[in-house]
Image (cartoon, rainbow, N blue to C red; front, side, top):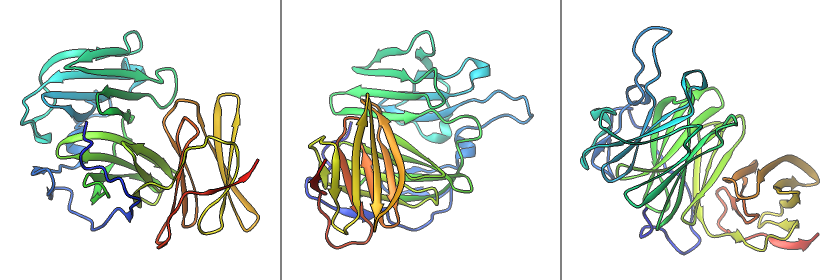
Length: 298
């Protein structure tokens, strides 16, 4: 797990930048970025078996994610590969562990791998190590998408952005060749938090990252954000929810079960990422002033 590159000050940035050809070299990690179609290659034919989506999750360890319920999924195959593994090397390698509906946890090389949400539509691989927890959604066949650009985050990591369809994008957070989490924005903005850095991916394929601006009180009620937009935090049972209100006009309610991965709410230039523990961070796109919301009361 990387931690050294995380900044402690409140920094805000639009994930920067320029579209790269899908085959362009990835500057930070000195390895090639290959198109998603190559990374999750499926043999020709409508009935061909889906090989899965490949993630290099630890030195010498490759995770192959398969989410095809009709073919034994969701599954995560952990395989031993070379420490110099590249995306073009494929997924062949000795099987270290297999996670599926009947066996959801394994420990390999000091890391604990857990397959969650196997009974739901969005299964996830959680990887726990000394530096924290990384979480990866298991994309279904056809949801891997086509790489459209690679952009840099505020902590020096990168986000690879894949287009699946109109208003449907997926982002993968990587540093060097290691993958640290994924977001899937289908029709609404998705958000997440990795080691104190917040990420948001819009259904138009725009990505943002920032640190700080955290409201850690876990107090339900109304918060006033720096631009005057209100964020209403609530909890019903074990589910946290947030709703943005601009000039008296409420936006959609976005919710997340207690202890689950984050969700996000967006209204124009205002984004809130709500964690599964009730804490949240806010970001105003393009604003010079960035600060946590001020609690106004229940």
